[in-house]
Length: 164
Figure (spheres, one colour):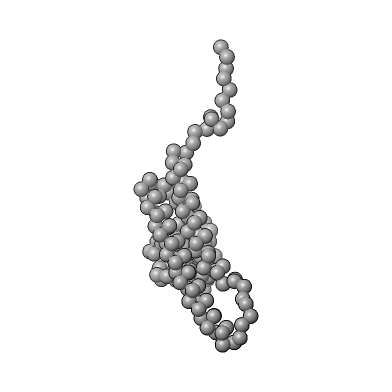
């Protein structure tokens, strides 16, 4: 009997929902790209004009940029809502890293400094307990706050033995 060799790629079965995983990944990447486009629009080259014309051009440009920013933000939100719908319908779990960058309330991509405020809080006795550090993210769109523990877990003392 002749033995047949199976290639390594044929030996490993594919993930059951690989197409859906790639769709979720694409939706997240596209939403992140659109959310970051708001910051890169400010770097357009300027042309030389008089002071009175410069003021009117600046106001027009800021109005256009704000309209474009809201359009990008609404597109990013719709992509995030599609992402949530796909992952919920097919029961694909999003990684914690992805979940932490999406506002649960308004589906905004949370980017530090532009769409959310980030601060580290420690409400222990004067901030002496290092394991009590908490990362607080506040969405600028809806005001929703999320809290994530940062420090290592506190080490527990072993239980006392009951035998005397």
